[in-house]
Length: 581
Image 1 (spheres, rainbow, N blue to C red):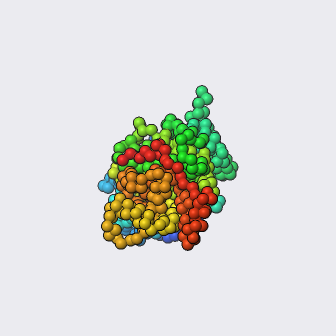
Image 2 (tube, rainbow, N blue to C red; image 1 turned 60 degrees about the vertical axis):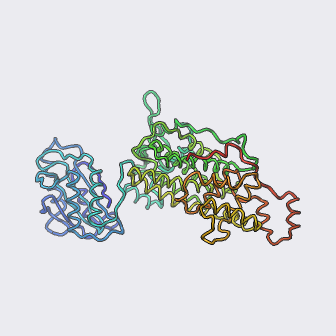
Image 3 (tube, rainbow, N blue to C red; image 1 turned 90 degrees about the horizontal axis):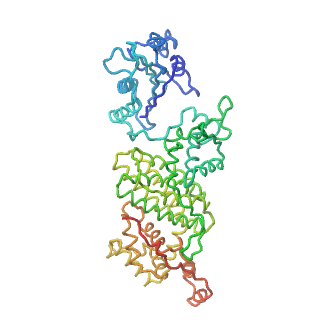
């Protein structure tokens, strides 16, 4: 159940006329009163002798009686809507719900005969509108401190009492939802999102990995947004407004949104605090990396996987300072959503939108450095699209496998603090990331499984024994044979590159728990490939072996002598450092 409160000025005639009217699309049917302050208010919907003007006049009477002493805000309007899957509520149910809402918010406490005047109008099966005036019948002004919070709390109790869908309670840190007018406008103009939502996403992406305020504003303009800066008399920038090109109001003026109205953390002061963790410019090649010839997008995705793994470990430690890691993780998701191939882009954008809610709470991390996460995001943005530039599917799958665990760690962190909305958003983001991972990992994992099945029988069984021992199934009680083909292929590659398979597997397994992973094998494959600095797919020699399973041994040896075999070089020390445990 969702209560939405708005306030206004003037008389109630316009509001009552709308509530009893046909609606903007003739969606209002059987408009009638279900409850009122005295249960005798005129009902123009059911009694032909009553008019809208009579009802509005009775509501406005206390306001007119005080004259110039009336408050600036005189109208209180609350819509209360049930979920589409909820059971049907009749007029008596809605009348009781209306009285509970006006009691909880202070509009009309039970037993207070001098409280504000109010009516509850029903013109659809799933919701009512409560209209009230904010001058009590004794002439005093209504006390409405924290009315929105109180209405939400009462709605949670009503859900429980009536067996309705229980919504997660909020904490006042969510972004403002689009108004009905904004949604109608988006539908009229054929847009899938409102201007507010589109701008919020564009601003988030612009700040992802930005190194300075100037770069942030430049990115906004490069994204095609209109940008207007607010200056102090001294010339200092105080804030900013953004608008979509072509989005105009009835006066043909651009529809501007301040950053703070898009989301609490997108105000310029909050963005400036984030920019103090300036990312390191990672656009150029690094000294000391593997000899493997990787594209920039692949390199930065691999680096981001290691950074995300460390952030997940910090969240698992449970410290309040880990709140900053959530902000950095949000930037990383926004960076991937901008640069990933079409096959995964939609799910990644949905994941970033969902996780945005998880980045905000009342917990402030004052002393945490998130430059590593912001640098990883910056590297991904500057490297550009991964499509067709080497390791595109595998490198993306590598970072997504880690981000799934990171979002689940975020859900646990929020749950431990009672942040129901943020925990739900984290789990929703994890679901989208899993879907994106399946898209990205299909080709490289299939290639690794084929390479694992093509290994010589004795070598494959040796690696299977190592795997089963590390995963706690030394006797192979499941009876499965070859069920770790991709992992066996990865260990075989690592062994050829000079690593000890058992040591690698133990190290990868010890980083953090694997209980939340849908596939332990997938997680371990990507961890080992990152530790050993292996390509994100089977090496060329392994693919050749898989393609020539039925070929003569002499032909395979000849091909290898011709120089078709290539394996990754040994890992550098910097790649061997495990995340915090």
